[in-house]
Image 1 (spheres, one colour):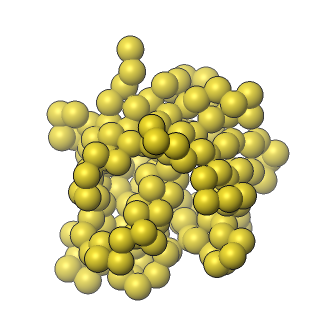
Image 2 (cartoon, rainbow, N blue to C red):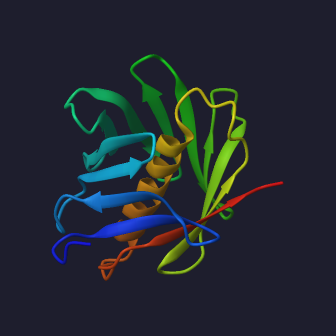
Image 3 (spheres, rainbow, N blue to C red):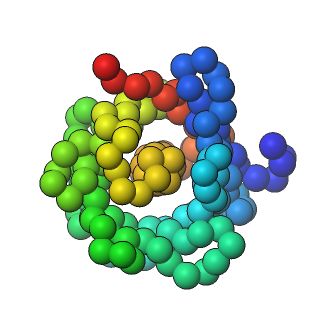
Length: 162
């Protein structure tokens, strides 16, 4: 890991790296999420009407946008029309499909770790790695905005539900 960049790793319960999330610089919201099946640029923009844009790492063309409709909810719309929903609750950050069926739950465990529970992995129309990385990014951005002392990387521990 470059000493000048913030970088997080998404790990399985066996400490195998599933994905990485690296910020382009330590004072911005631009990050690159990477997994074995893709690499994406993520960027938070706006203040009152916050949104997160998603593009392929090798392109500046947005493929999706997450609009935060309130402090607790968001709508993720891809350029092909697919829609997903984000909701914060006491349980954590939930990502659901257009039918509002839960795909995953990201639950912060402490300052440096979160638990990602995959509810459904085979029937998502977008790569599960992209949806997981985006959820993880949203969790980190939210954490950063709520805790100005955040300066380290957060490790997410991935677990599959039975």
